[in-house]
Image (tube, rainbow, N blue to C red):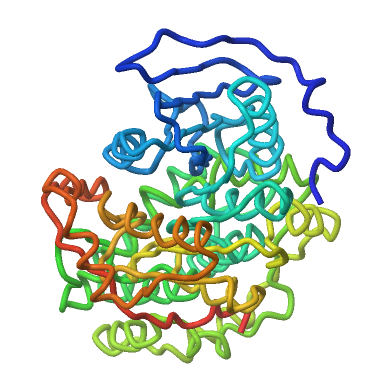
Length: 448
């Protein structure tokens, strides 16, 4: 797969051990252009947890490299004797699956040489980092012993950017023909124009109905609040969908992160030639919301689907599409156990879990869900509980019981500080009870 034949020892390396904090050895430095951070407790238990961060916007660099999705989880794991490591990747922004696999492979080699060879290596990540964690495990099947993929597009980059193209195509066709979706000339201006279009559309029932259709075809649920139940109002659900697009997906659909993907792939990797959106709509998780929105707006859904059918299609560049499949799509092959964790109302569609499950041997996969809206809105208690599912499987060779009531009980054993959430999409903070649930997501429309 990726990086076949790479010699880790030949990579350019700089950096050394930083001063110890509370007797934990903290190592920071740079490996071939990728900053890293490693923390090893004095009573290291022999297991390394190798974390992957998600998709960052251009020019964003965190103050400290993330070692876990929730900082409370990282502190707890260090206290329990686990070593933690993560790379910022040599390309920290945008879709960086290829760089993440290379740079995390290099970091694992550095750890072997500098700290010692771990007894077990579990790789984990959140959002885009969940996909990277799965890809690394397939690249290093003899080194990675287990995987936890949280709230990620694990069906792969091709599936993710196809969803985003379908969202943008619907908006452009029904609301704003001036928007660019591929080969974007001025990404900043294009995003600003898209924001104006979405904001204006939210002001009328007809505009909201068309945004609901775009949201359904793009796989965005109408529930995006971590600390509130799903809105009972059609308009409220559409506002939540659209807010997520405006604050999270905009650069990936209309802006800089889309152009960055095309630059890496050498062309446009996604298209919709031959796609029948009328046939796809009933397969989406939000098709009922669409029909209710069109009913409230007294708008003809069939006519809008006809407009989508008549609109000129976007052709993919086959070489670019192959690049995205090769570098960003899990095969499902391997023998290591994999657990996934996803809120049922995540803007990165939980449907990715269903598509990924079709590729993986069922005996080595456990898929966990929490009954909550919002992207990656798991508490530290829930994340630690899910991680322990993987660790127990790695250590014993058998999956523990993963019934929601059992997982909730395990999560409640953690103190109050492990149950806090911050809903960054709505600037709301509060405590959240463990909310593991059974869930069977609908398939991704294009992959069903």
